[in-house]
Length: 362
Image (cartoon, rainbow, N blue to C red; front, side, top):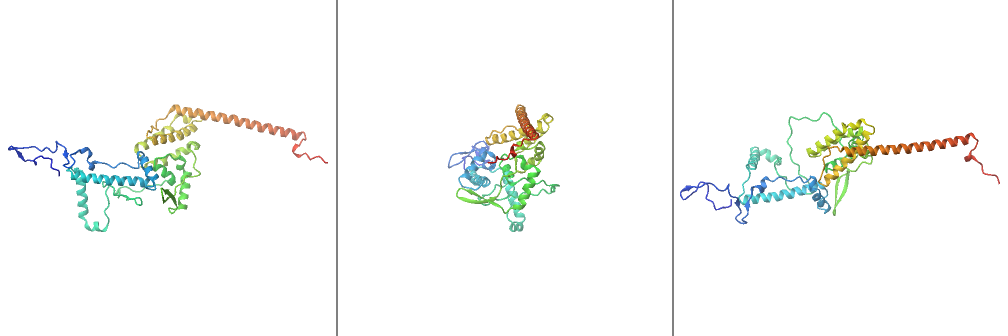
């Protein structure tokens, strides 16, 4: 521990016991002269979530430079770099006389005692990291999985919902916009059939810089429809699986709750009972959900659950105008067909058959 020039605890000066001063003065590195600030204690640092949207640019940079093949490996590399840096910081902190938090020491002693209690088990199987361990260095080709304890009182689900396609799951994993049609019964059944036919052996070749990497093939469905083309019944049908997979893909609770409130408010909106109301709600959902993802990319996401009544009214007016124009055009086409049919009928009754006239004889 670094010598800070103070007498040991309990040592007397001028015949009088002196209080400890280490708590009142910052610890100083003898070599650098820099005080140890507890707020910078590396043992209290928490690893950033490198899969979150605020790290999109950094992950994309690693992929574009060819350092890694995809964003998942980019996040793993950033985690490994952080772990290596924080480990050096911890060693330096101890070397300079910094204190290790009591909870850290307690966890280390508990893990050591657990390993020492059963040496045969330790020799028979590799050490399994606990949820408090920092992740070890991860290479581009392998990802180290962490042990998750069994929830002993929890049983499996009663029913199963067919998952969406790998393409849809990939989009959700990156917090990207994905059409609701991928979560309808028809699309999920199609994805299931394709997955059974393809199996896990179907791979795609991805180019990352100067290297080629094999990864699971995930392509957009040619049968997927835009959200604005769905019926209201299909939107409500897709809502449940969509919300379930937001949670499975690790979306923040705040985002999940916002989407749940968004769909609930649309489903209970008074416009549903009005002419053209459900069509307007479908289009509103399609337009504003896509716009929310754009605002998320720009790191200024708005609250999707707050229904913009003015925007909804404009969308409904736009739809009614389109329907009116289509009705007028349809009436005009019908009238034109009727006139043509009347002319042909009149010609037939008069015995004129222009199409059947024979060419004059020479």
